[in-house]
Amino acid sequence: MLISYESGRGKGVEQIRWWYRAWRYRLKLERYEIRLLRDRLRPGDAALDIGAHKGAMTWWMRVAVGREGSVDAFEPQPQLAQRLQALTRSDHWQNVRVFNQGVSEQAGELTLHVPAGGPSPGASFNQPGDPNVAVDTLKIPVTTVDTWQEAHARTPLRLIKCDVEGHELAVFRGAARTLAEQRPALLFECEQRHQPHQDMREVFHYLQDQGYEGFCIAAKTLIPVSDFDPNIHQDPDGPFGYLNNFWFTHPAHA
Image 1 (cartoon, rainbow, N blue to C red):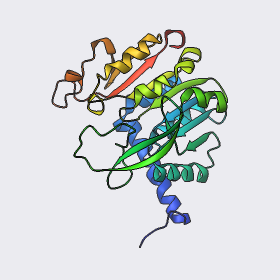
Image 2: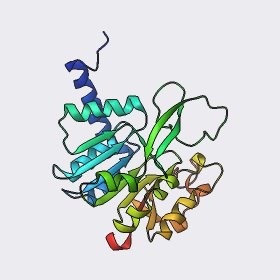
Image 3: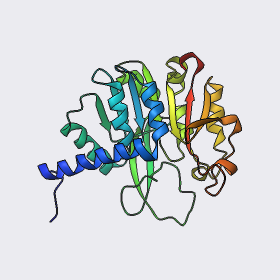
Image 4: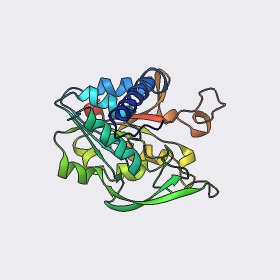
């Protein structure tokens, strides 16, 4: 029997799946990452979830900031954004706002490339690195962190979580004023395979120029990005496995 999401039973199933996903991330997939964001965020803080996908990290950000805090979540894939909006409404999450738009260097509209077959964790505003990969394209409105903070911020920004499949540098360039004035911690994914035409470490260099210090997250430890080499640390068969999550903080707000 097919269960409609709009039915009470359908909503309950989706909520259970969301709860399961959130705890799977905390207990298995991204234990250290969630520990870092929960240690960083305090009740009353504000945070951005850029590339919220199915909301696993949104869940823990919301828990950390509490009722008095706020989480603004951005998900450019319409189906995923609508699902997350429905879930937050049904759970009466007053401290979470979900927006079906992207974040980049300039406000406007960009083409989102979604691997064919439906919503995907690999959707990106960057062109696919492999021209043989079939994708669907969507025109999506985008904002910048600076524009958003100026128009919508409720409290100073404490943390940005960013998972944008190769579009990280554009996101952080569009956050220049926020990084300089508010110095939020940054938890983000970055992979060389998503940036075939440039060195992924350009993202690190940009943030270091803003005064940030960065680390690669490896199991239960942090590796300084000065020691990070994608040829070594993003080799699935290498001694470190495949490391793609990073933690940057400003010394003034470490």
